[in-house]
Amino acid sequence: MDLSPTYLDPKNLSDLKDLRLRTNQIVDGLVNGMHRSPFQGHSVEFAQHREYVAGDDTRYVDWKVFARTDKLHLKQFENETNFCCWLLIDQSESMSYRGPQEPLSKFEFASCFAVTMAWLVLNQRDAIAMATFAESVASLIRPSDQKANLFQIVEQLSRTELIGKTSLSSSLQEVAVEAQHRGIVLVLTDCFDDFESIAGGIETLKKRGHQVKLLQVLDRSELQFDFSMPLKMRGLESGAEFSVDPVMLRKAYLDVVKKSRDQLVHYCQSHDVDFFQFRSDMNIATAIRWVIRGRLATERQYELG
Image (tube, rainbow, N blue to C red; front, side, top):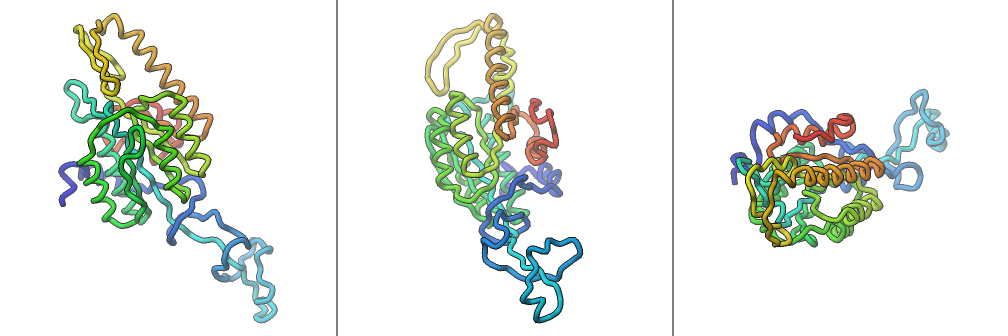
């Protein structure tokens, strides 16, 4: 199965080849890797000794070894572990929207992003997992650091049907039960859900010790509402139809969009969650760079693509 023509844009992967996704908090892992484990000190199984170096903490000197060898050695208990990156992708019907002249729908952008990120994570020998959701979790690919997971992710996304409404609260609670080891969780969604539901879902993951990044994906026309002719609009999740004059409605619409975004930004900043708002026509490599760099990008993480 050739992944390159659809999801794995060779230019994007070439741009990203030297980047490494790192968690900025201590993470759990199942196999030895290159990330710090939270389990240190005498509460875990002894690993090995190493020779004492000036400046080391003398609390971990093994005095029994010193008595036998007349040399100072430290007990080591810290494991080096890999981490798991969970990709959570909204498959509600609103994610199917693609504005006039746009190359990708919101779901197609999220899929391209997810597959490229999966490739990157697996390439550094960390584990990847994926779930798609609407009102509840619809599909689940369990954590693995094997390249076979990449093929499973592509196949699952290729056959995903976009139906139903979004409920981040119930969906993220389900994922929290499955994601037992702390790691990074990337939530790709248009956030067409009640604010309380979004916040409740994120808090469930945070309480489990996960580092959460909320990635809102919107179409350019949803952000700019630059229609000029009278429209008949249909809600993709509600099914309601109504006629509107976009010129008269534009200011009120943009005020609502700004208020919603500001609410999400404020919540995320005050709860140690990285928030990104991407346009579905944004370059995938640029979007991934922003996410990997996280807060190093300061306020730029809130700019539109």
